[in-house]
Length: 163
Image (cartoon, rainbow, N blue to C red):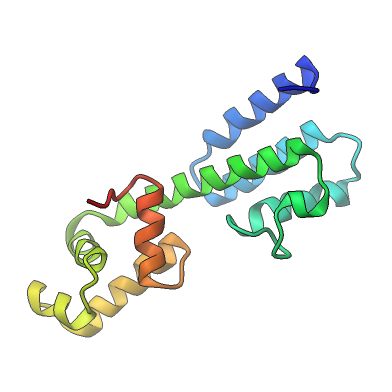
């Protein structure tokens, strides 16, 4: 990294290894907090916690609707933010893959094809209400609000390639 000491680069590499080793949102939050503390030891605990919350608040926009770059933050913080986004997408992909077996897998395939709950229910021989509940669960697991966002999230994480 240009303009960053070898020691800081080493800390950053170790922090990234911990981020990518996480297996849940909770552990990702802890690893992000550890990375902030390691990379920015001069910050107060309150500032470190604030940065951790901002990094983990939303994979797209940060807690206040702006990326770290909009806050004139250090470049390392912005790079860390980008890796947190990648880790959240990876975790979303794992959540998606855990749903891809059995009935939810059949529903999400049809969801990706743009079928309505009623059409999915007819094809699978289940009620529209059952399909709606499964779709609701898929949206919750992927941390999205719309069917389209679920398909995009699953696709962007590599869990559900579109053809």
